[in-house]
Image (spheres, one colour):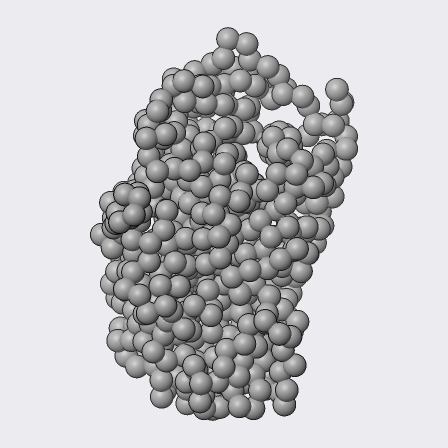
Length: 259
Length: 285
């Protein structure tokens, strides 16, 4: 256990990175997923193959991309291919182990919204939209989701379902034409939730150090299911923090860019 | 054979009011200079198509050139919203904007279908997404062999596709490398294609199997140095991330946006003039 202080966001990114097994082929969304994926690659999972929807396969960026087609992703890739191919041959072709998505809203079956808050026709907040997410959620063998946890994000009912997780729970995903298993974990700044093996309802299985079960329940807009035994996530190691902070510092410097 | 002309002539000759226009480039090689020239020539009622509308379409929409948008991810990457796009959708300013919203996989397949002269694309996609409730153009089809239900979307068949590339030779053959997006498919799906390039050279020296678009599938090739800025051109210049961030403040309000368009686009003759105008504005800050 380290005595170093760290932020809730750092804990989230580090906990998410630990979920990535070395050697996995990983379809990465921009933002928090990309930070976690690159941290994993620079710590315990150096053989991880990072794939971005711009068509870069095996990217090894030294700074985090601001956009999903940054030059750094292409220059450090094993292969750069056209977009119709990344979606048709690689994602739909069943080549990707793990999809890693962010979201603005999530429900108890890990369905996610990245399209609008409020009504579609007259939104309170218009988000960028689907991008690659619906097919990443459908076709990757497994899916990880990472976002900050609060009542506005963890909702009883999504304003818009952009990408399907476990739908109405139970067998409802299996009955649809969804090749992948769907979400296997949701990693937040407070803890980790995994779907119940039978009902598929998200269940709190781990809280981050210093966070109580009650806090996580209170930050969830539905009555969150809690595992019989809730573990405490291991605190970030010195090494994890050092690599993450170096990555963020290099990124900030690189993106300051031209005026 | 493509004609090698100025961008002003190419847009005037090959892009008409009311056209369906695809301006592609996924983060990389976004044809910004061509977008500006469309605004400068005050084209109207365009039906525009693009996976990621980005700054280029925020500008076209705010300038009143667009009446319809088919897209799959509408944000300022790493920064936030496209304010002009939002204002058009929510408040009809400067005119109403109809949206046809998709996901990337469907857009990519629709370009490939268009390039292949097919009426629609099919894919194993859009499963469970509410996009199907708001976009009647996303339908399904049953495989005649297995019975599997697949998503179907109409092929994209632009009147004009506009892209930016690194090099052309003097016959108008075009070489592109790096993140290729859907540019090849968008060109092949279109009736006419305009390509701006960083430079026109005597010999492309293209490695075998690299992406070369032969002159005879293109309408016009125009040399516009820096024409993809503020996006990047691999081998030439980096993405101007600071401008993407600065755009948020410029586009947030109608008056700051309009002043920017008037000063830097309507107030200049071409992309070189635009860049000088921007530099000049910076010097006075």
